[in-house]
Amino acid sequence: MGKITGDVSVLGISNLLQMLSMNGCRGFLTTQQEGQRKVIHFLDEGIRLVAGARRTNPLGEILMRTGKITRDQLDELLAEQRRTGTPLGEIVSQRGILSKDVIQTALREQVAEEIYDLFTWTDATFSFSETADGPSSGEQGPLAQVTLDTSMMSIMIEAARRVDELARIQSIIPDVRLIPERLELPAILDDPSLDRNAIEDLLPLVDAQRTVGHIIEESLFPKFTVLRTLYGLAQRGVVKIRDRGSGDTGPITLLRRPVTPASERPAARGRTVLLLSDLPTYRAALALCVRSEGFDVIEGQGLEEAQQHLGRKTVDAIVLDVPIETDGGLEACMKVRGIAKVPIIVLAGNTSKQAIANALQSGARYVLVKPFKEDLLLERLANVLKA
View 1 (cartoon, one colour):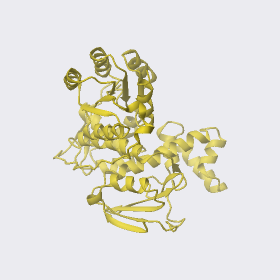
View 2 (view 1 turned 120 degrees about the vertical axis):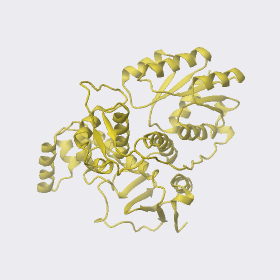
View 3 (view 1 turned 135 degrees about the vertical axis):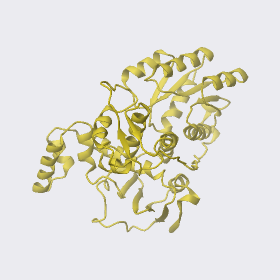
View 4 (view 1 turned 180 degrees about the vertical axis):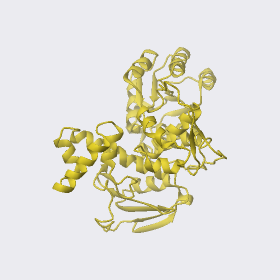
């Protein structure tokens, strides 16, 4: 392939990443937009974000936002790092704060967050080069040695879900230059759909002076989590966004997954899956993945559409995307199970073990917590259809 350059708005970041992955390209992808720059290194074992991480000390901030250490403790650890030259991760592991495996998992999640952010870049330019020459050691970011060993389809599915959610968020926060203003905080804000740690981190920054963009920069949490939390707080009347205006997310281009040969997917032959989700981009991404395995896929949004589809055609399995931490989500699962006596796989956001147990009691055969690798969904479909 040598070297290619272009405009993300023409090709689409989704198609670009998938094209490089499917063709087995190895090299450096550089994307730039409004002074921002990210460099992704494609390797045999996965991908690395060698430059462009928003966080200068991602491990320290991960430790703080998960409540493992305080700001003073982080300053002490950084002082030891400077004094001894020992990497921060090794110091943390030696002190027993976190194991090496947990540290690596947290850092891979941070790399994924940075790559998901690329899917919101619409006016970026890109260049890809197969040359062995990447950014110099001085230009490399703090995550340069962390390898993300997941497929591009998995990344695309989670990115699609976020794009759908951002479309909702932009109805209240269409521009990061707007200023959130704190209203009266209720005595108890116990909402399982919001991250309590993120709320505690963000509320002190909502001072009617900082813009949403400033809050994103100063928060310990990733950009998507900040926007999602501010949106949730605005919906609940805890904050308001001044001069709301209107927003437009623009189109997103979906990826295409190579179709598995029929001889390698006998479980899918002649089987129909009903896929229910009120997130259209996410639903379409999942449908592409499931169809690529040879399943027939019917897409629907909610219970009413489920009843219509089930009244017209027999399905073999149902994939249901609902918030199982709420009574409404569990009720939807029970109603779908009552309509169709077929296996149900529930897709849920980050949630508690009790919520998962409740979903299983409500009729789900499996519960997959987002984000998940697409192969896990396909494996679960194959399992429920073996009988």
